[in-house]
Image 1 (cartoon, helix red, strand yellow):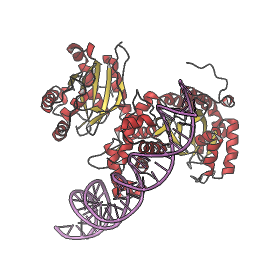
Image 2 (cartoon, rainbow over the protein chains, first blue to last red):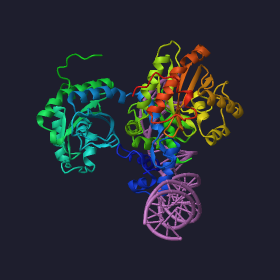
Image 3 (tube, rainbow over the protein chains, first blue to last red):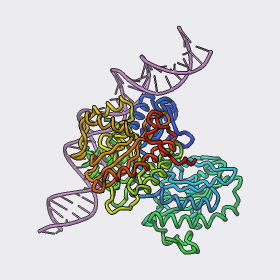
Image 4 (cartoon, rainbow over the protein chains, first blue to last red):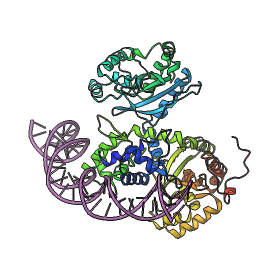
Amino acid sequence: MGTISKALELLNYFSRTRPAIGLGEFVRLSGRDKATVHRHLVELHENGFLEQNPESRAYRLGPAILRLSGVREATYPVRSVLRPVVTRMAEAVGELVHASVLQGELLSPAFHSDPLGHGTQVHFDEGEMLPLHATSSGLAVLAFAPDGFREAVLRAPLPAITAQTVTDAGALRGLLDEVRHTGIARLDRAFDQEVASQGAPVFGPAGEVVGAISIAIPAVRSTTEKMDAALPALRQGIVEATRALGGNLPKEHAGKWEVSQPETVD
Amino acid sequence: MGTISKALELLNYFSRTRPAIGLGEFVRLSGRDKATVHRHLVELHENGFLEQNPESRAYRLGPAILRLSGVREATYPVRSVLRPVVTRMAEAVGELVHASVLQGELLSPAFHSDPLGHGTQVHFDEGEMLPLHATSSGLAVLAFAPDGFREAVLRAPLPAITAQTVTDAGALRGLLDEVRHTGIARLDRAFDQEVASQGAPVFGPAGEVVGAISIAIPAVRSTTEKMDAALPALRQGIVEATRALGGNLPKEHAGKWEVSQPETVD
DNA sequence: GTGAAGTGGTTCATTATTCGAACCATCGGT
DNA sequence: ACCGATGGTTCGAATAATGAACCACTTCAC
């Protein structure tokens, strides 16, 4: 692995629950030598990707990230376009909704909205990359991704995140056939011991999958009826998100989400 | 310079006017060898900092940046906190307002709002880092920064951005004394041939400068009266932004911005 | 068609850069 | 004064970055 990747991977250790990290902790997390880690941190710092608390000497994500995300959003808005759709969905169903975009063989969270309605809350960490085989968003993506991509993912190791994670490629292929048929992916406790979720794919201009939107609810509260009740909101969100991103539903599948809409507002 | 910096610098070539860049253009912009640049691009791509248009093969900023900015905002919100303040200011004065945070010896844009009211518009590129000596935001920061930092900046080369840029350290020291006295920095055509601006500093918890907010107006429309008319909005914005960021105005200077406010709302 | 001049991308010997064990400095507690 | 944390630095050894030359593919002119 190149030096650049080693440095950039350090940034991935940040999360909502770990917003600042010291040198020592970086060393423990990465397993690399202290000197190496330190040099990488310094260089990331010099470029504004990290900033350092002058007293605790701990590092946190820096202003360059803000600047670059501003540039990306200005020219290719994704978060700001997904925000209203996801927020509306979260309010409609009263549960946590999150949108992610495909990055390599993982999903990168782009936006999430938690309506804070219930006592039991689903914890969602926007810093964590999501595996394709163990999340409903991931299955939604895989089901509608090109065959080559899907097979490459299924050939790669499929780690069990929880005891309920499906790790058998054959079993997954079966699930995916179903997802492709219904347009909706459902998983129970496959990624988080306490969460059930259902998701559907979002498409780009050429009808290719670019990401997914999922609704996550506490597993204890999950019933088929509740899941079904959220379906219209999910379907509508998929259509809206795809349209808002300038994408198109693939013609042969569009009917799975595009149902009896009461006229769309521009 | 290390490999990491070389790679990260590539990301800085993106801007609102240059949202996608091909290999060849990167080579021209950076002056580095094609093979080197390509390897760096691939590695940035692998980590999600870039994504590639499969047909044009041009690169643009990737989803990882979105994810990381989400993490930063979730734990240390800056943009979302500045947004309402800056937007309100822009609406109040009817001109472009931008907020930037200090990153090394440059300012990194964090948020800007353009009310789109006038015919002549000020172009603001959120991708471009701002020099301290040639912008009103920069002077506002320098005036209230620690002596050591200010002198370090003034000792470094002070490139002329336009014919009106003040490049003499002595002259700048004079300007800064004035800024320190009034709390407001004004510059005319020092960074952009067609823009005049006035800015003021934003402070962190310990009363240290962390950034600045500026109002930019087309130089042709700039008069002292217009500048003065925007002062109350600027002062109020400074107070609000500092407070919203969890910062404190340094006691010995607070009176410069904290004037006769009609009771602040929590 | 042929070729010239653009793209983007790859190879491989040379060499410069990164690496990491050991080291130092500072802090807080006993 | 000492211990055990922390963060940070040094310098020879070893690895990984480098770049001239090369390939493959388009587009355009003729």
